[in-house]
Image: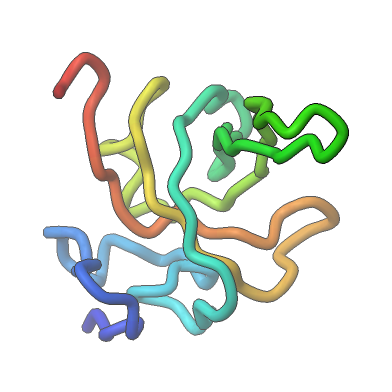
Length: 118
């Protein structure tokens, strides 16, 4: 049994709920998504059930009246039902949740784009 997590344009993965036994999965577990929803590129997938995403943004520099490009990294939980779909370089949608560990407070919700796809 998968549930609607309340984020527009995000649907549960196409798998049976019995296969996903992750308690932190927003679709099949009990964790709720609230707060920021952001996109980023997967740069690391070494740890179990964890991915590191990088997102780019622009920062205005008042002194020079210009913008500069910056980036930041987020450590995100990867539910077991999405583990096979997400690879390095993929663009993913992540949502904020409660703290899962010392550094993880975001969960991967959906894969938006594959590597090399335009």
